[in-house]
Length: 480
Image (cartoon, rainbow, N blue to C red; front, side, top):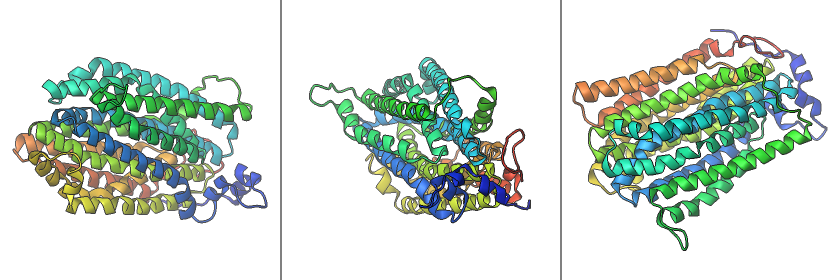
């Protein structure tokens, strides 16, 4: 195992935040570089986690409202959901990880002049990528959903929802990358506050647009998509305003494209985005396999797997804090502390996901019954959650350690873990269903196997010290 080395004492003395510390105590960033690990980790994670819990509540409510439109609408939403989650994870946890890591490492190594430049490059990247995905999904959406088994009213519902969601998906990219930049700087409260306001808007807006209210006409499933786009547009404007104000206050220069900064962002962001893409491909593949068992099974997989997916946002709040703290300490050369932060975060993540995982594995009907009373939906969903629920803590370990690696500027090993997860889950699922004629429960077994393999690779990478080696070409105070 590679021996971990702490950063030199001069790194602490030269820290930009220690220089700004006053007699009243340490600055927030200085607290991330020295002292206890758990307290600053929780303090940084809580705002994001609070927001994500609120967003999960909004997401559950949205599925509840869509479920009132019937099984076809629920099945249509299930077809769209993996692709929307792809956009969310690629922007917040994929390219957003590259942005957060770049900002955190710049602060940790004392390169404060690069921070505002990274913000500007993040906005440009978000617009380019977001508009690209809008074009792809608007043109190819019908073909994609048909290939997954969508037909008739379910396909019509999917397209009504998808076309609105993806017409405005650039707002999602800009808001998530700006939020990632603020979190990377240690300011998780600002994006959290904006998201909470958006969640408060979504609670009444979504049912009003779906079912109609007063002068607002009933839009059906398209109303759910419209509410999401309005919220994302508002969040984008608020974050842009906050960034421009901070940029003006710091005397930021005009934007000039810099391939070094783009390389720093994309060096972590592209592999992390490919991880999100592979996770989405796994979900798409399993969705296609679930569709072979009928509309009821498709709806069941959509409901049950959404619980799996909702654990990811919960973990993301913690993982983004781990990424920021690891990035600052890796940038400062404090590798021993970065390693401790990674494992502390993994332990907290196991608790956060283990409790609901075990609960819904024992009593899956509590979750499934919120969305459907269809007997096939309930039976198939129970079979899936009985198997996957106990593996949520294992998923937490893999997820947190992969974000720790990204914070240190490394994405190779997390990418290998996600690739192995895709191959195991989709491959085993296909063999079990298509070749061996197994039932719907085989999809749960395939999902659990993929999680175990993913976690094993991430643990091995962190324990071996592979993720703590200084990335080539990255500046920092000290190299380990």
